Length: 171
Image (cartoon, rainbow, N blue to C red):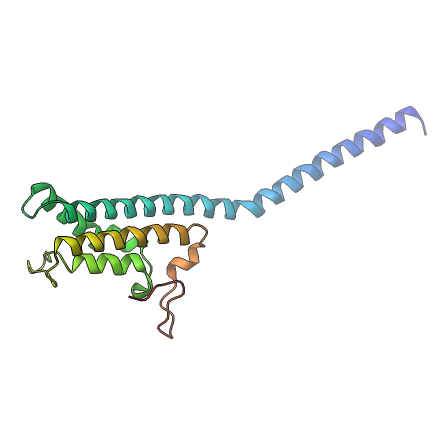
């Protein structure tokens, strides 16, 4: 084989290698793109979920520790109902009875005057409000831990038909 033939073989192999690398790189991007987009969305979603959980626990702690009639407490009660009827519904499970955060929010809300009728469902002492606030905080902590590696499809699943909730605690 002459030097000129060897150069043309090496040149052809060089072009073929570059094409193969480009094709493999393109296939890799096509393969990993959907997964990276999902991870990006999941991070955004769980960042917001964590922020709302911290907001809810901070608000319930304010309500539990401030005296009735305090303007900051009244503002916190309004913020609680805003979270309860709005943003928290986005980050809680579709299965209300299986979601300990949802259950803790409901239990706490029973102690507050309902904006619709101005009455609370239960008369709760300061101690009871404190305990329900702590219960919400623990449920939020557990929810953050449990949701760390959940897939997006888990957000749309309904309640188990046999009335049991995997991972839920009974009250």
